Length: 174
Image 1 (tube, rainbow, N blue to C red):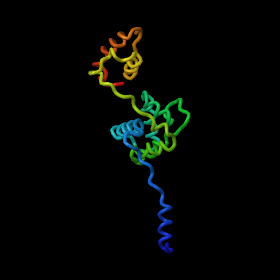
Image 2 (cartoon, rainbow, N blue to C red):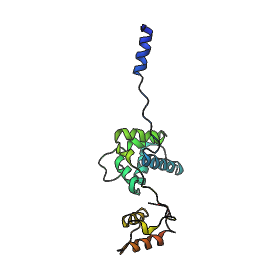
Image 3 (cartoon, helix red, strand yellow):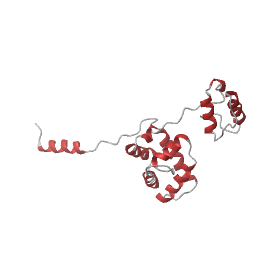
Image 4 (spheres, rainbow, N blue to C red):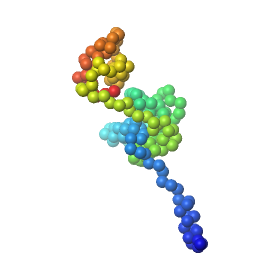
């Protein structure tokens, strides 16, 4: 038998909201990594922590973003071709130094695609046999480096170009 006091305690516990779902390990990989780098760059460059300054800085950083990071920028509305504008969902919390993981959790609720973004697996070019890669993968390596292979027709042309550029670029990008 429940007493009136026991009933009110049970009712009070039932009304307490459940804690927000936290990110699992590796979830929102691109969001957390990109915003982490962005937050660090704000601190390194002594950017004023107000929404307007942060928004301006994220638009600038997104201009140079490639691959999955560019897709993330698109999702939050920080690219010129973006259909939505959720950039304030990033700039406002960052102005209060909210941890990037918490910002990504909130973004996930607004658009689940944001947390589905994953970086492509990285290749260690110092140990991989380029001859065993597909031309598509060779082109992707060059693209990640911001390079192209004009006049390349054969697989060997792409391999030669990558080998030539390897010292200049990171040896484990893809």
